Image (cartoon, helix red, strand yellow):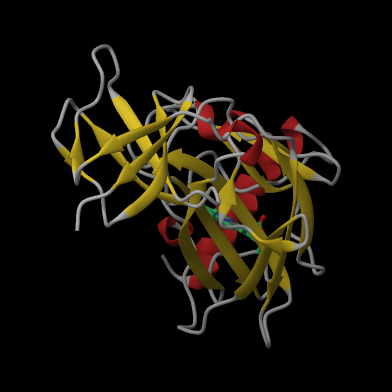
Length: 252
Ligand code: HEC
């Protein structure tokens, strides 16, 4: 399309949107966070190769872990670009082991700010900019799932735009990073199983998550086994997102 024709096309789209809701929100359309099965901001936006930078923090710290069943987390996002002045974003969460599971994103909430909530065709919840903004700063919140769903991926699309009301001349960044589940220290169990370097999951258990004694997630195991422990030492093993066992690898 020529630039002129594009203007007319977008102009008429805006007019229709305007008729539907005279002064309504203009978040990005449905599902373009880059999560499995979704599109990305590149489906429509194009422009310079420079990318917007961002900081996304949870309770003021880097967002890299979650506590299953833990309290709600306050998130804040800031997007910057050296020359492009209008910003937008869209974000969702996905369980790496089961991308269509809606539970990781179910706890996303657009409050306390003007952040839009949307739903994608997989019933995942998304949070997005409500209107493109020259401030590029949003806060929203997330209630972690009650179950331990193993590693979760955060998918996010961000756009820094030139503000000309078209999809040209904009800078785009598609981001993915991982949140690892953290064992709440209060759940550390007293019983200790003495093991060699490998173990089997007990009858009736289908998944186990392995942690250090400090609650740092190491890895997940599925199926009966035998499963290898990474090295000599004492670990926490959580069976099916429930009780924690202390297990020891005493072999050299
Ligand atoms: C299906 C097409 C489509 C997709 C996908 C899309 N956008 Fe847009 N976006 C548009 C159109 C059309 C405009 C221009 C009209 C306007 O300014 O409202 C626009 C405008 C914007 C603007 C304001 C630009 C300006 O110059 O004022 C921002 C910010 C924005 N989009 C962010 C995003 C983000 C972030 C994503 C990905 C999560 C995204 N968009 C995905 C179609 C899309």
